[in-house]
Amino acid sequence: MKRKNLPYKIQCNVYDNNSGADMSVRVRCNRCNEIATIQDSVEDSAEFKTLYCTCNNHECGHAFVTHLTFSHTLSPSALDFTTEMMGKLRQMNRQQQRELFASLT
Ligand SMILES: [Zn+2]
Image (cartoon, rainbow, N blue to C red; front, top):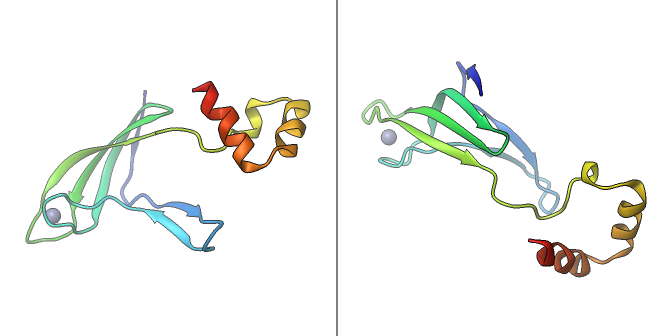
């Protein structure tokens, strides 16, 4: 388990291929909906992280814990396949790929 002190807000910059937008992941307070600051985090596993947050709304001041979890794979990592397997997957259209991976879960 890794513990990491985070003095600033976590910004997970995710590039959206459809809109080209920079999508930042932010935590919002569940009491007032203001953006919260992640004060600390514990990486319980590669798929589960505990975030210790405080609300940025000074009139609220809510301190809370939330979790960041992996849900499921939409498109497999290229690291999980051999070059030959990746070549075969690339020959399939998106629907065929989805059906293949849906049958595996
Ligand atoms: Zn709040």
